[in-house]
Length: 195
Image (cartoon, rainbow, N blue to C red; front, side):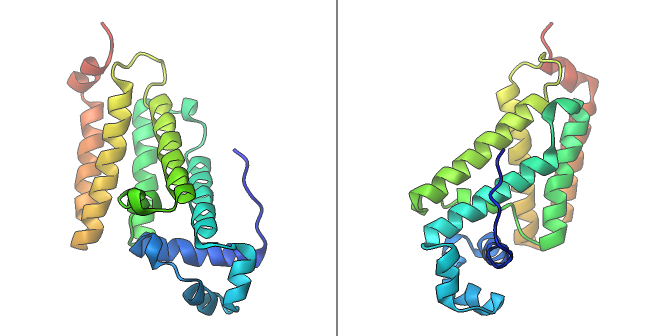
């Protein structure tokens, strides 16, 4: 995946914009507010990202690259290791920023996003699902891998959202532990594999 190289000031703008978007969605970003936080004029934000949609697109694209780079090569994991990697990914975001996944926030408002931002959110979930399908099915034997990948991502994102909404990270921990424990049971494994 090709990553865009940004100037240091553009990186600061992206960092601030991502923080605002993770806490309040796409409408939470304001060029004036970002400029104030970064210590530049609003026109300088427009220099790097001419329109709000350009900024949103760049934030999501960079976020996707960061997540996929963190997850690494999906074929290098066992099913349990893949689940643990996903749990750590979401847990780190939750405990590190007290907010949900950027694309979870934006996905909930996809029908009102500018087309280019909505497209990037769609690509994020497409790529994350593809990673999960491969990583959760290392030997190509699992039945219903699409459902398993969707279920895994949905459980983690939903538990993360509940934890933030309830200000109680034990919601996420309980769901993640149950998910991991369920996948490790023999009964669950037998239900996944072709006879």
